[in-house]
Image 1 (tube, rainbow, N blue to C red):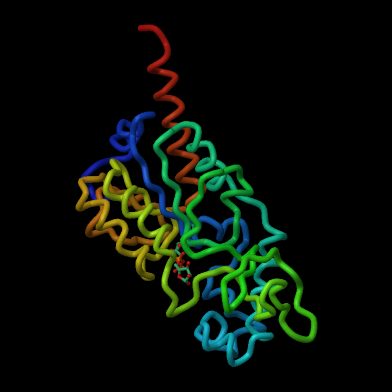
Image 2: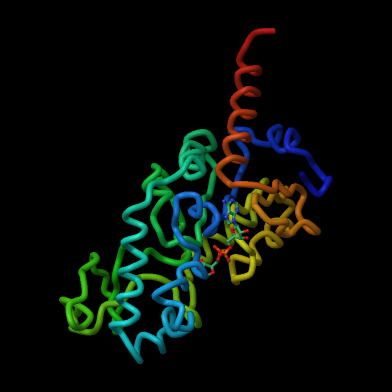
Amino acid sequence: MNSGKIDEQGLIQQLLPSTRIVVLTGAGISAESGIPTFRDAQDGLWSQFRPEDLASPEGFRKNPKLVFDWYAWRRNKVLEARPNSGHQILAAWEQQFPHLTLITQNVDGLHQAAGSQQVIEMHGSIHRLVCMRQRHPSPWVEAADTVPLCALCASQLRPDVVWFGEMLDRGILQRIGRALAQCDVFIAVGTSGLVYPAAGFLDEARHAGALTVVINKEKVGEDRVDLLLQGSASEILQRLQSSWNQRSQGMDSPG
Ligand code: APR
């Protein structure tokens, strides 16, 4: 299914080793590994809290232990999960396409677990902590009765993720801006396209002249993308990969 400007075979034709590709992933790619999306993670035990109270500097100041425990719960879910074939194919693309830039909004580390080595984690990582005062980094430590403290400055440790109302790292945004300005093909996988600045990347790439593709189980961005591939992220990436393999084999064989 697509918006008609290009079809799936047309996309495969564009995917050459020299193509500058930017892939942006969101919660949808990890959904098939059993990771609850942010909203799903509001279910059950945590449904009585507002997202702003669990994922904001104000929420942390008000109740640091509550916020820390929520992230510890989410991190345990991530530790139980395995990357799926969608993550694995994108890891293979790192070898296949030397000019690939992989950007994720996910904090779960599943791209790295699948073997991707150059991942831009624009919203940080749930596996690391930083301190509130100076952002000194720290590996994960469990909370006891209170949240753990920084070994260097004794301020409280918090997850190294971007919360509501916080700025993204300027260096990361600059790297992303450069990749978007130069990209030939932009592919958004499993993201609702609601949360800025990531929500603006597709238009940035389009204005830079890139072919734009969305892979989503819903009809996201159908009015403005060149190709909408609707369905499961892992199934569609597998299909693209096997078409790409077939085409490459065809190009290698004589005659
Ligand atoms: N295959 C493809 N797409 C899927 C699948 C799947 N198996 N499962 C879900 N999706 C799609 C949904 O249709 C939806 O469009 O993934 C998208 C998930 O959207 P969100 O939950 O909004 O996740 P994301 O876009 O990553 O959110 C961005 O918002 O909650 C904050 O900081 C958090 O990084 C997050 C940011």
